[in-house]
Structures are given as structure tokens and as C-alpha cells.
Amino acid sequence: MKIVLKKCILREWRWEDKISLIKNANNIKVAGMVRDRFPYPYDNVAADTWLKEVSAEKAQTNFAIVVKNKAVGAIGFETEGDIFIRSAELGYWLGEGYWGRGIMTEAVQAVTAYAFSNFDLCRLWAGVFSNNPTSVKVLEKNDYEFEGRLKKSITKFGQTLDQLVFARII
Ligand SMILES: CC(C)(COP(=O)(O)OP(=O)(O)OC[C@H]1O[C@@H](n2cnc3c(N)ncnc32)[C@H](O)[C@@H]1OP(=O)(O)O)[C@@H](O)C(=O)NCCC(=O)NCCS
Image 1 (tube, rainbow, N blue to C red):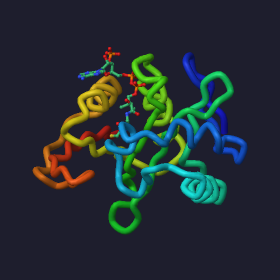
Image 2 (cartoon, helix red, strand yellow; image 1 turned 45 degrees about the horizontal axis):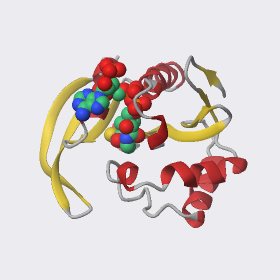
Image 3 (tube, protein in one colour; image 1 turned 90 degrees about the horizontal axis):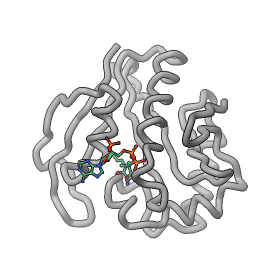
Image 4 (tube, rainbow, N blue to C red; image 1 turned 60 degrees about the vertical axis):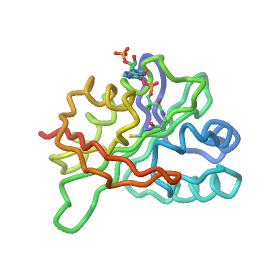
């Protein structure tokens, strides 16, 4: 599945993305805003693990964000199973060299539409660390509503922070 947008292309991950993946993912400013399962440093093993995981996907929920033929970021969503079966968590990151160009705003818009059209979901949500106003802006621009602040719910690189929950409901 390939989604062509104005500023980037969203497509499946490929093994040839590995070098660009490592180059863009291996950044403490990226790792510092996402879960610990996103490794830092982001090395060859981390890239292999990720590319193996996404190549085994049955239904596509993960996309490489491609700019000028290079995979420079990621966006995807994860269904939660059990009673949360119609809810999915959205996650994304972009290489620092590409920030501030509106790329993630259009990627979130496209993946939100894709997820609601192709999966039996009625809720997409994202948890943003309280020190990440840029991500809040991306979600707000895509009509994700602020649902609440989970006080001191996360600890990232030794700093305990609030998590801000945003959701889009249909
Ligand atoms: C958050 C992230 C995905 C944003 O991607 P991006 O492509 O740079 O975002 P966009 O350019 O589409 O939009 C950013 C918006 O935030 C705004 N912004 C930037 N810094 C800001 C700040 N300190 N406070 C408020 N808004 C800010 C920009 O002005 C822009 O809004 P505008 O288009 O209305 O001017 C990117 O910075 C990133 O990957 N960060 C590290 C990983 C991460 O945070 N992932 C998300 C975890 S929830």
C-alpha cells in the first residue's frame, strides 16, 4: 500500500531502507519522545529487529515516511485487542532534518483516514509526553481532541512526566 502525499510518500518498509532508518532514528531527540521499545542508540540490530517485525505484518499498519526516495520516519498504529479491539494507538517519528515542514501533519491526516477506512476502529489515540508541544500541535491540527493528562505516568531517560492523551473518535 502506497499513499502519495504532497510532501512525502507513505509506503511499506523495505530492507533497503536500513541505512536511512538508522541515520534518522539514531537521535536522542527522537528517542526521547517515544517509548523505550524504540532503542537508543539505534543500531544495526535495532533496524533489523524493526524491519523483520514490519515485514511480517499481515494487514499493513506501519508505514515508512519517504522523502526523496529515502525512508526518513515512521508512522503506524497498533490495535490493542481484548476489550480495546476497536481502539488503536497511533505512533510516529520523523528524522530531525525533516522537522517543521508539515510532513507529519499530512502523514497523520492520511494514516488516520486509512485506519478508519480499512479497519473496524472507532477510536485512534496518541499519548504525548508533556514536554512535546510539537506533537500536540500535529494532533490538534488533525482534530484529535485532548482527553486528559495522566499525571506522572511516564518516566523517560530518568525524567518523570505527564502523558497527554489525544483521541479522534468516529
Ligand atoms: C513531533 C514530530 C513528529 C513533528 O513532525 P513535523 O513534521 O516536524 O511536524 P509538522 O511540521 O507537521 O507540524 C509541527 C507543528 O508544531 C509547531 N511547533 C513546533 N514547535 C513547537 C513548539 N515548541 N510549541 C508549539 N508548537 C510547535 C509547528 O509550528 C507546526 O505547526 P504549524 O504548521 O501550525 O506551524 C517530530 O518533531 C518528531 O518526530 N519528533 C520526535 C519524535 C516524536 O515526538 N514523536 C511523537 C511522539 S507522540
